[in-house]
Image (cartoon, rainbow, N blue to C red; front, side, top):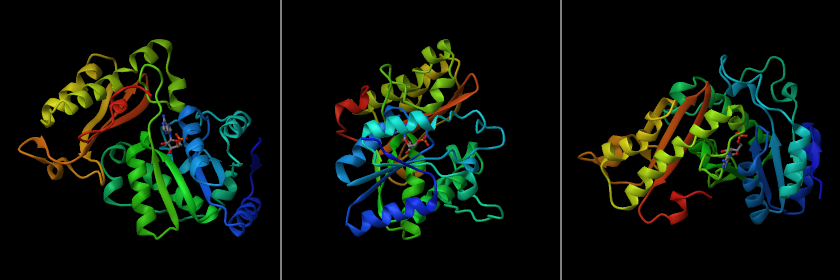
Length: 298
Ligand code: AMP
């Protein structure tokens, strides 16, 4: 089945009106395109639990900083349309920038505390761009279940907070990270890596995995977990941006989830690092009794 390719707001609205009238459950997978297995896993998940799946493809200018990769971000709508169709999407919504951000537009949506720190500290304005575009999508596409990857863990928590605080009639589902066979989290930006950088990129997951294993064996000391995660990164050419332990549910500060230097609450270990100018992020949830495959590649 080939997904319907929709570019205009009007066409998208009338398609969804018909679906809502038929009481079909709508599922939405927002993306910036350059689709890979990570995105496709979200589309498949949406297919399992909803009746009409829309994949959005929009490289959102407001979430890129002035020195970031907006210009060179991969754009291949035809291929994305084919891949989204093969994963079972019913529609691909690829709006034009002029319609998303018409001349004179001046509104931004800001989520406060949870957007600060981590990626928010290193990419000023990034989450403001994300929450603005996602709220536009929530308004345009309306009621439904929206699927986001845990790969962008802070983004997921920020969007959950926004949906809750602004009473959007949406359900948010966070989906597992899909990885390459060596553990590197799939990302459209992995394509920027040279072959030698690609070899080294596994260091991020190696570190997270070492901390995860140790946690599952009973280690709770914050410094020990952080140094386990850090070792492979330090041994590589990655330039570390941040490596932090936060609360799993609200990204609470370390002081709120630890006592005497040991974790006492479920946590998430998050990392961002640059290799050859390419910025990569990854994370792993540390909670007791998590399924074994979380520490492995899948
Ligand atoms: P992006 O196109 O990078 O903005 O990503 C669109 C959605 O796909 C976001 O919700 C991401 O978290 C999710 N995503 C990206 N990479 C992965 C991955 N490797 N595994 C699971 N979800 C992913």
